[in-house]
Each structure stands twice: as structure tokens, then as C-alpha cells.
Length: 155
Image (cartoon, rainbow, N blue to C red; front, side):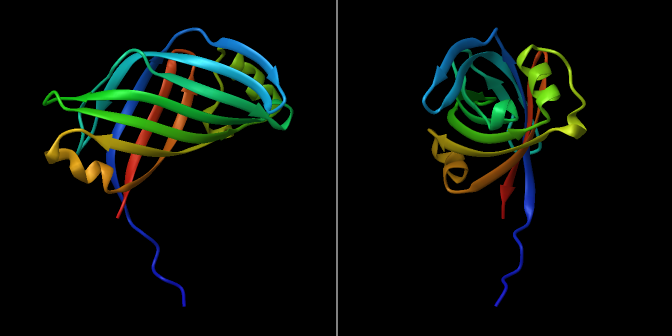
């Protein structure tokens, strides 16, 4: 028996500003990088606010440089002052040429990049408890000036 596919509801768009990458180097697991998160904006039909400075995106680069396994952790402050902890795991797959362009801070054609994510949200205020009680998926685009994400609630 096949169950019907879930529907998606647009939660918000997130524009994350970043600082220069910190190159950790090659470990037994792969190439490690840390990208500091310096701020950003959150706009959407269900959630609005800002990304607070102080988070980071921890990256593991595999596949000879073509796969980036991402683990971003940061805090969103909503328009009403409530705060939400975000842990967003993602997979970004690109050609070696595009991967090198991304790592060097150069623009790439987003249509040539597979970038999908699974944000987990932890709300602190009762009116936002549904954020902690829902599953989310998203799409992403890496640009030289930051990361752009669209989050969707899985209904």
C-alpha cells in the first residue's frame, strides 16, 4: 500500500550572511571547513525575523570535492522577540569545477547545483511550539555573499 505524498507549505526564506571560511584541513573523515555566520534575514508567509551572528556552517567535503555535507547551527530571532535554534543539515552536490568555484567564493549557476536541506527548529515560546513539532525540508543556493534558503513545512 502506497500512502499519499505529503504536501509542502512555504515557511520562509532565509538569507544568511557569512564571513571568510576557516579551513580546518584534511582529516580522516574528509576535508573540513567552518563558515562563520554573521547574520541575515528571515522573511516569509509564516515566519519573519533575523539570523543572529555567532552561528556557523560546519562542512565535510567528500567525493573528490564534489559533495559538501553541511551542518549549520544558528539562532533566529523572530519579529516578536522569540528565539528559535536552527540545526540545518544539507547536501550540496556539484561538478568539480563548480565546487572549486564555490570554495573560492566565485558565483556559479544555481541550476547546476543540487542543494537540499532538512532544517530542525527548536522554538522557545509557546506560540511557536508548532515549529518544534513539525518536519521541514528546503532548498538552497550558495552565492559569493552568502547562502539563500527556502524552508517548507511538511504537512
